[in-house]
Image (cartoon, rainbow, N blue to C red; front, side, top):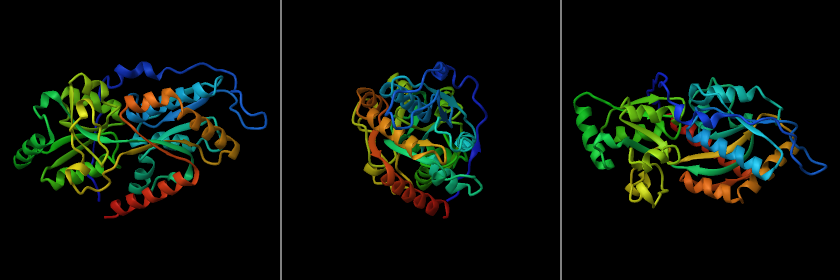
Length: 335
């Protein structure tokens, strides 16, 4: 299934509210670790392939802080290299082959991008998967000023707009994957014309919805937590089976609970990659550190505040999952 995409122009000031998050830390000595094992020599750089303030950025910064917490003495700086629906950041990360001092907070775009674009120079097998930590549910969200209080109201009005030749503009954080495909399937299946507008991450999409430049957006709960809690945004429906039974999400349906049959209607996985061809010792160092972080209070608080579901996979288990997911995306994009 090919999803038509309109590329958004950069939204002025989109990341101003969260720009302070991008500050980098200073150099520090390598961490203390096993005497016979690999430890970092100098700073570690976390390459985020999307803009400041989006779900990948939030996850990357949480992981960076978590690694520093469980491995005192290391510094993990965060560097955003957004553009091309994540491909610019991934391509830069590819160039760091063999260097274990680079990490990347990965998500479902690692699978959907190569499935949709065979000209990319990478797929998930190109990199070194370290671990999957959480699942992140995507939601269709609208501004409180829209007049839509639930999904049924939205569908009713959107059908009227379609009849008048006016498609619904939906902001997406990437051109493919578990935002674009299920959104297109769900809304087009209900007789609604959709005009997807792609931004380089949720950090740019939020201001566009606030300003009325788009009529809806697809986001995960953590990205829009502040706006939802402040009453500025209203979640209408989520993708998959998982629901959030609290706050503004209490009682909000998902495609699974509402009985919709939608392609790729599941959340985004979130995990961590190292570049291609890093040593087994470096892989073990990071896997052990990530395991330690998942047992901390800070990890639990991050999961709760971002509305995530813990889904931990390591080693062959995660590789098998990625391979299975890749097959699903290839099947959908081949339609």
